[in-house]
Length: 338
Image (cartoon, rainbow, N blue to C red; front, side, top):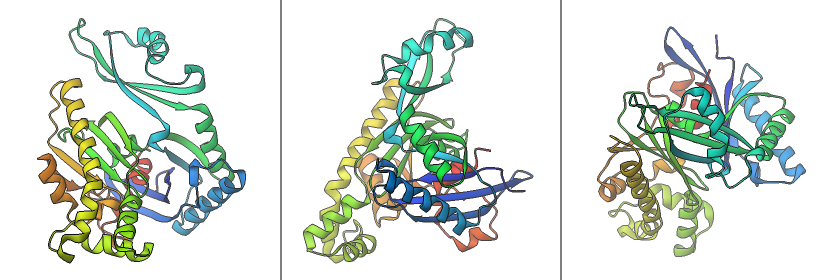
């Protein structure tokens, strides 16, 4: 029987849905589809445009032939505040009483205006040592907006969670080494530091595939569709087109390298025994030719592609969508929630 909820990733460029089933510990891909997000997407405030978004969600679900009306939905990372903090080693009851006061120091909105969640990442056995806690705050107005959009599409929201949490569930196992997930979208790139399947740090960078395409358009005076073709064909390979496309794209990617190295420094200074040894790439931008080698050279880390469907049974729909687990990581992580 399929899981009772499907994953709904309302991205700024694409809407993606995934439904899975788990039988006897084995994972099966039941349904998956994506469509382009209507202009403006979830960041829009116009009721007319948001109605188009609801209609788009319904179309995507219909295309996938999802068999349930209940979903888990991702919140765009830039709309959420996440902080790893340290507090005295408190009991659960003491922590619940103190967390709101503590959160006020880290959240740029009044606590009453946000939905606040927290997770104890590390509680040392030594009662005198501080514990690590991940704070997550989402503005209530943002949550209400998501709930209305999904309801207007005809579906019920069973859970809302961050993109980073969904990515960690889809791509990281508990015994994996400390990892930086790099989710390369069209509009932005998300960096997520994960240790033992727990999210420790997130960072949203306003650099994505569209920035790369626009750079190629400007440099070679090309229309967008042809610039996209150049980007996907030549990427940052120095032996393609005399390295001319690489020369345009690499300066933009240096911004990403800088942020990755900052995340690495955060890990070293904030979390004990957390030496990062690898990057895992996902999202549509992960297919950029030469990117893995470039990041390996610039960060000295092991770089691999993160396929959310890597440990799924190789049958049915999955065989018709080779390699797409890299693109559907968030939606798959949401679907695996139940």
